[in-house]
Amino acid sequence: MNQNKERQKRRPIAIDLFSGAGGLSLGIESAGFEVVISIEIDPVHSAIHNYNFPNCANICRDISNVSSEELWNILNDKDINEVDLLAGGPPCQGFSQMGYRHIEDPRNKLVFEYVRVVRDIKPRYFIFENVPGIVSGKHKGFIEDLCHEFIQIGYNTIVPVLILNAADFGVAQNRSRLILLGWRKDMPKPVYPGVLFEKPTANSKSRELSSLPPWLGASDVLSDLEGVSVFIGKDEGLSPDKLEYCGPRSNFSFHPNGVFDLCHRRTFTQKLIYGHLSSTHTEQSIVRFKNVPQGVVEPTTRLFKLHPYRPSNTLRAGTDSKRGAHTAPRPIHYSHPRCISIREAARLHSFPDWFQFHRTIWHGHRQIGNSVPPLLAKEIAQSLIGLLGYDLSKIPVDNLPPSDPGLLSLTMHQACNLLGVCKDVIGKRNRNKLNT
Image (cartoon, rainbow, N blue to C red):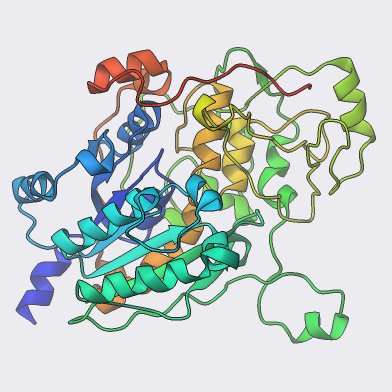
């Protein structure tokens, strides 16, 4: 009993591997955890994570160059002797080229590093997140090998592994992710979270019998931004007073509330919402965007036009020159002849308006497309809180110190210099644009 009382004075401890800008970190924090360490190789992503999580020790490095001893030194400095949750999704670009299923294959290096950190840090639970494709076709045996590897180091995993759709958890986006839950053998077995929303059906009888609300559509999270002009070129920020935070949009309020009420309180020098920034388009593209029906791919640009009453298609990230230099295909707005803004993409991904991204369109959309939707991450992480012996009503919430706004607009060169990283750590962007 005394041990539980002492434990309740602090939040459960988490580490985020491959953290990106912080979608998984935000979801874990909103579930009641304290994210104390994050590891991210991309300096621009790392700087954004640094801004949004000022109390987190952010390591900007290839995870294979981060020793377990270094992680334990950070934990010991914070007077932490045990980690409750380790979470992360090793980058998945290589899975489509895999010819071998074995975990030891050199091309699976980052997955092996994830296993290595679990082995050495010995968290009570872990969340392994990835693309659904690693359980299909020629990759089917890979997840079996991975689960066997975890058994060898003292962990059980839930089998079969589930693929969860973010739309089932209140995200206005049709986005499926593989989620593998593991637990140390001295801990209770976890369970996957139950769905909170369901795909609408044409069957009226089924609708009447359902106890769950239907999936959110794009307009459920974007409608109050429809009458606000996007910024072109320079993002001057929006006053929250111009927006209507009601219904599902109440979760996006400038200060953490609703589903984010367990997040620490951020300190802002200016109460402005940034990211309502979009590109200019050619007259031809504007005509195409107007003419294409909602919920359909525009045939020339191959861009999907959002439907106001359906979830967005999956938002994706662009790639650097090492992986083809593809610009992320941003959806067309359902009522404006333009691609969606960074802030609109963030809402479709379930980020609140106070969460910050890089000030440029390319980096901002890349950070969103690479991230785990926070509401999906929250539901998964919160399913573990009770098993760890915590009472959600007693989770402490702190006021965080202000962050440096300069972190939000660093070039890759500036971010590398600031974080002491080699400037070639991330492949350069090829600035060939989509024909829009």
